[in-house]
Length: 290
Ligand code: NAD
Image 1 (cartoon, helix red, strand yellow):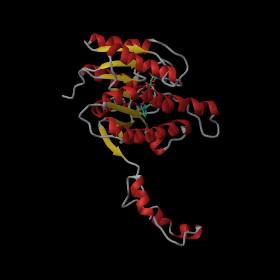
Image 2 (cartoon, helix red, strand yellow):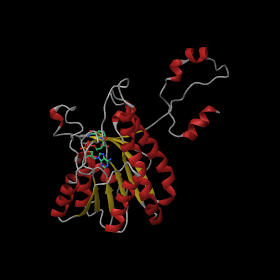
Image 3 (cartoon, rainbow, N blue to C red):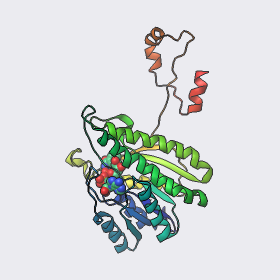
Image 4 (cartoon, helix red, strand yellow):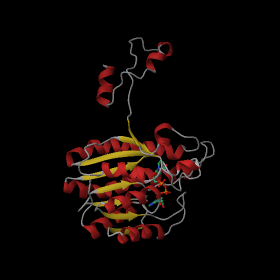
């Protein structure tokens, strides 16, 4: 059994849905958990100490260790306070699960700058800030595990979610660079693109999805990714309903010519759009251009 005894985990947005499920699973397996949640509505407005406190109470009732935190992931002070809660109460920070998220859906033409910025602030800035605050402790320990929460909407696009999909693809870039930079310090970072029945999706998913697409079926992957035995880093996984798959950003074989004109490009469109054989790294992409 994969256990987390003596490990300290921060789970942001852990008052509801996926974060709650991640926190309960890690605590059940021995981790000391900082349960962070601002306790607002789906669009990020409002605040309440209730959700984080309820999850902590549940963990303690089952004999686990946890502390509640209601700071906002999207401000440097909030992110630092979340990490301070881990260090002050439990002495270290081994795991950061950036899960807090909000929705402000609107079609592109109607979306306000505030709706765009507000969503990026929680998902991208929040994940960056909490990881940044935890990073010095992980570096010092030579060990860390970070999971960022992307989305199929970011990987593949979705109507009405220009802000959300920009944020969620941004997290793929953050994860890949953290994976590269963290390697020398024993820090591994991965991202998930989940589907689960939560308050965020209950109005969108068909009712029969509820039993199959449980948050627990996402948390199982997250727990593996933040375990010391997991070697993966810089990867993205699609997960939901009991299925998990690697998602990769790939570049096709391409077409090249010394006659590189707009007309030649138009005339070779089929070769340009080909998918196989593909390359997976910036280095291999550069080699193919030479
Ligand atoms: P949820 O609304 O149940 O949970 C999100 C939690 O984040 C809430 O408890 C909320 O209070 C908290 N939160 C929001 N802003 C915060 C802030 N600034 N600081 C601290 N906490 C904050 O939704 P969920 O479905 O459990 O979503 C969890 C994550 O998974 C989100 O990042 C979401 O975008 C992502 N996601 C979910 C699905 C899905 O199918 N449910 C799909 C793709 C991605």
